[in-house]
Image 1 (cartoon, helix red, strand yellow):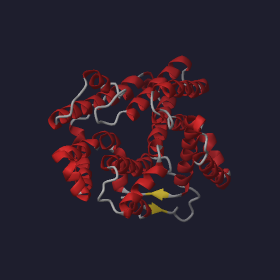
Image 2 (cartoon, one colour; image 1 turned 135 degrees about the vertical axis):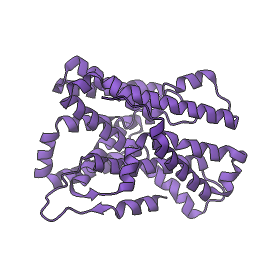
Image 3 (cartoon, one colour; image 1 turned 45 degrees about the horizontal axis):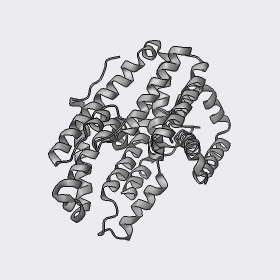
Image 4 (tube, one colour; image 1 turned 90 degrees about the vertical axis):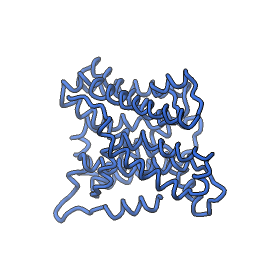
Length: 341
């Protein structure tokens, strides 16, 4: 699966046109959607392999998938957080009305659509005969717990939106707002350190990185044009160093620094290389349904017949889950709740 994804990416990379010094579309909607599209399929691979575990029928090549997953860690969500932070802060910076209504524009539709998905998972669990605890099910609507659905990322991104809005309300569209966001997100990581597993907070500074990039975009672009190669080398070295740093006591801090360096590498890469893919761009533009609903076919097909279908036909299990996920994402527009800005 990773080989197929890498092939799709490789054959859709485009060098700069003659006379161009950089990719003017490096942070455009199409480019960012394509990059997010790559990583949403990494999420799919990691999630579906989690359902399969290490099946007895796996051969050596099948098991390599889990080695690849181990290298990816939580970095698969970094682009989602970074580009969300960038997009929100660009809007806050340039549109006062949007900033004032950030909770309505971003948080409310995200929570509403997430809760619709939770209802679908409740129905699926009941159909499959899976016991649902009442308190856990009620908390699932907040994202604090799950009933088989993805939840932690939605909780995390909504908290980021709320904290951004609070900082804006306190300091307005100023540099102090950005500094405040850095501090309150740090406080969030401290609180979640005691309450939740590490993945609830160990990449969240990618969102802050995106917000900072949006705020100081002009200055950063000036540095990128002037010192591109030194910045790229430092970013790669920084990423490699912190990625391999063995500091278990400071894992959350190191993981967040790694995520920030990954953001820098990602931006610098797209600054010089184009990625043009309708498939990946479509995937990135349908990020929410692909992320939230992909577990429905995975859960259903891994449960029916006591899991026999998945074990005996695991290639077919993957293929059907993939097709159903695409189908759900294609039909999502009919249930999507959006708020006119």
